[in-house]
Image 1 (tube, rainbow over the protein chains, first blue to last red):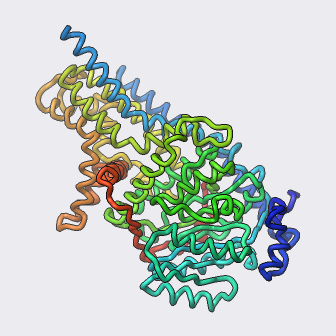
Image 2 (image 1 turned 45 degrees about the vertical axis):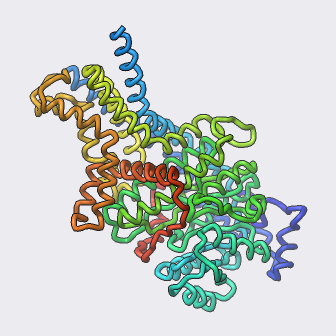
Image 3 (image 1 turned 60 degrees about the horizontal axis):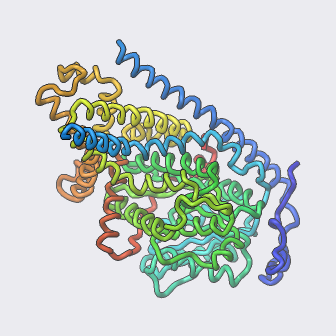
Length: 80
Length: 503
């Protein structure tokens, strides 16, 4: 399980913590952690997006192969 | 002596003509880096971080689109108690205030209507009105700046906020896809353009560590970043998005493109509307170029905006029309000076064009298959039908030689001479034809406009807009905020687009 953050990267010494600011704004303090559903959804999206990003080098390889094919065709046409 | 002079001039013209390939080579270099995206997309540092987000919607006469956009925002898969929408009504004279008030009543605590009584100063002023309220309220930890016509896919905000857990990230931008329901030819060109300029180019900019521009309709900032920017958006140019992007990075914060977060926007259906929008962007780019003149090509330990390749890409985009004109004139000069050399140069130039075009088109279509399905014809015809024929001629000369009844030598009869000269002139002439498409659009010959765009190419149309921006700059035309009209022609398939897909 990944580390859960819901309150931000950390309190800003000049602006106070999330809870401080929530109190000023008259809102209930923020939850201490994301819900189990949030974490689960995060993991699912992350896996999906990482898979997509990791496919990019292969897409690039396919595009390069197409370029090579065009170049080869050019040479073949000229030498025919 | 005369021989030396001819040789010198020929060599100079050759170099100038070959410079025309520079923008394409730079674009290829940019595309070549997309493969490195997995290591630079920041997903390894993403967290389930769900801060309180204030969505800021500047709205000037957005009655046709506002209701749908706000309801979609409130339907996002994001904790409702951490999401507020602020409609900053810029003295609208249509139904916008009524709709905003109705939304405020319908979603108490989630929607706020902020009214500017003195409006029409532009988006940046309107945003600043909203930012002042947000700063005073001190509720939000992040601000999503968007446009009234943008529809976010259900999981897009989560995909953006997950990066903000890292304090080094100042802002995240989403991939804005053309989202018009019944796309016409121009919408399809824009859809493909956005796939190249965002899904592809911005991924590459993630790799380079320097982003040129946050999408104006989908930029999520940390409140700390907004505070570091002085709590306001720059109002001195027409490129407030780019200025914000640059300033964020100059302040030492990273700006990230999240290509998996998708938003849909309605784009112009007519050349006139597109021209107005792009002229504003192009003029903004000229302003940015001048404003950061001490930044280009100067490396800094604090940011990557001064990296040579970043500068090269920026200036290639800005100077592409000038390079096309110089290339065209050089080729014509070379034709009269050294016809055989001119053909050799021309052929090499277009072989490079052909290979670059193949690489970029293939990569873009593979990268965004949803856009590929709807806009593959526009992708293939992006350089224009005439340029496509020239590419085929240069790469496979026998195809045309058979038709023209000539051999490989380019010193044939009058027909071949005319065709060769035409193709040299076309390097720049395509922009004139694209401009003609704009001129005829609202006349009786308006039916010719799409044909002229297909002939000249959508790329030529964009270059013609850039030339218009040079001209506007030279004659110091006033920088007016010509808003793009939106009519609410969004796709209703935002949920489907969110599932998408290959990016």
